[in-house]
Image 1 (tube, rainbow over the protein chains, first blue to last red):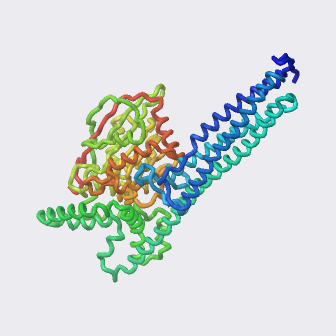
Image 2: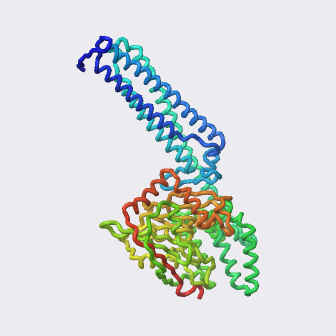
Image 3: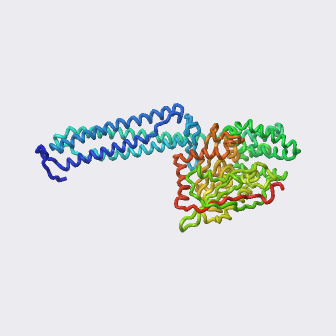
Length: 95
Length: 487
């Protein structure tokens, strides 16, 4: 893709296509985080007393593990978003 | 039981809906199916997140911004970590919903095997009892003949007693029923009744010393079975002036404007007549189409075997199970004709107890365009309704009335069962509280919140029926026998 270079405040050249890609990534990451949060809210956490017995314990612990994984997923996505935000800032100011 | 899992609650009190039938082998609680469905959705949604994140992963080329390269690489690593985690979470959700579905299938298969084994054991006991009957005390027979078989000899003897002895016996019977109503509403007792009813033919085969295989074959061919057993009882009753069907006359009681369409299962159950009228017919108009109707049929109103003018009696119950030619069925057909219902008008039918049996018999007749069936505590298991008619059949496990029709062999409705033992709605002063409409309305309310796929599909078909319809009127009908049974 051919892009037109513009001058950043510090005097360096800014690649608009690169900046656009970073901003696009930032926006879409935010949307994914929102969607993951929504999905997390639909995980059917086992209420106490729904079932009894070993199979219930296995089911409950599996669902709890699944719910816990959402926390880790979110942390990674937040990390990606923060790094992208930093990259946008650097690219916008220094190229 | 679900495999080795005890299924409880759903309403906070250990009374879940157990759903089966409807063309599937799966059996389980609504909570189980809801959890499976939710986990399936989670899996699908995580798949969408995965695809979106994969697309994001290719957006930025690190080499194009040397100073931002560190941050871009950091973001890329975090995205790839998230991709791995999302894939793992999706697999977990997928595995969980598959496991729940397989548990439901396994439970369904186990229940079928258990039912078949119980049936075979009951049949063999029945055959053995019949075979050795000449040397066994006759008094042992009623226990295996099922409720109807028990009732008739007693009724015949009862009618032969002097009036004062009859009142004494009636009072004693009421006291006994009151004291034993807990046993009569016990799911185990209902199960016993169900198997006893299914084994009556085997007792007969044993008496005749016919090969046991012949009894089974005749049952499979439909030559024997619950209907044939009921026919025998009806025949025996007619011999002493009871259970012979008589003509009925049906008249309109009142017509009022119809306020709205039913909002759900409980609303439909609430529309079943409970006063003098036995039938209610609601009319709807739909632009450019024939009018459509909802028919609501009440349960048994007279538990005697003859002498009265009430068509919703035991004569109709037994004749309905035996041959379909019951006074209450003819009364409903008369009411439908009076309302203007022909084979061209789409109809939904709802019924409680005998009303459910009547509803199923009307649907099985093929004379009407029946678009849906909703029965509560109906002895309709032996009625053959076309499988393309959406049908929700609700049964309480402690209700012996549906048990008197035996196992569901001829039809395959979405069967919703529930143990209501101890529920406030099922602890009335009635002798059979689990059979009463208030107890069934309690279950219908729970059914309104059910999210299981088969229940939702039938619900959708019922909702579609009135979606574009305009409510017009609601008419109630009262029917009487023009000649009393035995009169």
